[in-house]
Length: 364
Image (cartoon, rainbow, N blue to C red; front, side):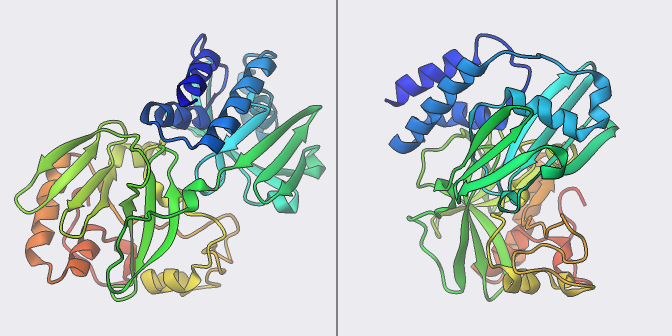
């Protein structure tokens, strides 16, 4: 069944360069290659691919002037979205990208507030900071948004209607991960890169960290790099670096490429894929005391005084070279007292403390 679904996917997506590309299809290609789809997901994927093929057509490009108007960009993207679209990443963003003249536009449709009759659209050009726009759209803008079920959203505008399926599989954490004293699972995470993770919180060190979810077939191939004290796995596609802690049977995310963070690519790390409705206020206040300032945060980590802004959980280093990162990880391994202290040092974030600072990371 999976081979048939992947054949259909290739037939739909490969013959020509589409006017709008979607992260949905990037994830589906990598998951098909890895055999990571369940039977139920294959059926939804097949329906999505078939409807996309049947609906192909319409305007293939937009005027450059439209880039100043998010509502027009949204209409263009929606017209080329599969009639049955699948939102895989766990913070409920549907990512897209397209070209207009020299502009390379990347953006997303955010469905977190669909139950309130609104969606958000935002986009930018990494090569041109002047192109960066966002807007919240709803009934007043001629956009119909309906939350049909917790997992299904309808969006319509100008006679074009699309159904968005919110994939929930990724919210399940790893079943083979053995928790250590003080640890608890926060949530399963699916990054827009297609990499599956589990987010943990350690009550003693008051720290978050991501570990690789090895329940599912891996979409990445990894290169092994040996340091003096640490062994790391480097994703050939994503550049994600995992410290391979064999003794604790886990692979901890310790680095993402600085270049990807700066350009806000799909490989910029899972900080923006933490599920939006988790009750994590207490954990966030312990890990990042600064969030108590001003009006603080709500139950889900959104800043009360800054609508649309959320606490970024980013416990990993930004690196320029793997070699420099490994040297730094080795240095932390020498001075760490316990396993928990070691993981805290490997994944340390400056924003955790107002005054305390560990030795500078690989790009600090």
